[in-house]
Length: 141
Image (tube, rainbow, N blue to C red; front, side, top):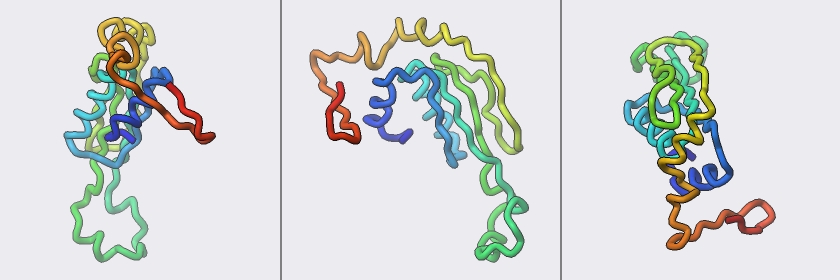
């Protein structure tokens, strides 16, 4: 989960280069979150969020009366592609439907990890211990 540091550490420890972060969170704080994940993991982040309006739902929806009280835009989107240094390569795309595209320079991953490697030289394994249990109950790391 994107807001769970230990879950992210487990993902980083497996050598993630492209972190996919789907969400329904259109708040500005989500943009800070995905930039943080890119910087922390020194990975590309592809964050997809939906742009949804009331007209995207059928008129006979069971909760149509409650839906009528909401603003026309129910989720304003916010999809983005972030590089390992926390920079936007595309997006964020708000208030309209669309598809984002970007060329990913994979060499940026290694270059950025020279500066900070969350599971490498910067991890302080002399101080910390991190264990991941897999489905078999065996520990990893």
